[in-house]
Image (cartoon, rainbow, N blue to C red; front, side, top):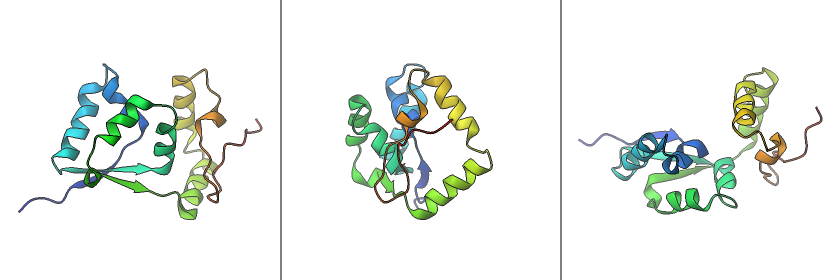
Length: 127
């Protein structure tokens, strides 16, 4: 009996890791496992929006995968509410800190795409 594929969330760092020498071996292994039906890669609308307009080489990696290898995860009101709860509790601080540390030339509001009707937007934070 063939085991059911494991569903794993991947973000842009896993996908982009395929073109980064330091992380390429591990990132490519994730895609190999997806191609072998061992994994289904879950991609949020946020990840897709980050990749679509800017990162052609990274987008090509996703485009090369058969549809059976990926599943899009929509941004729903429940997802937004959960994200807000994490922010209120300070649980997202480490993610923001590492993002800004990794991408020092970009402002945090430039990293977050806008999703009409989802409550998620790129409005500049007032800090």
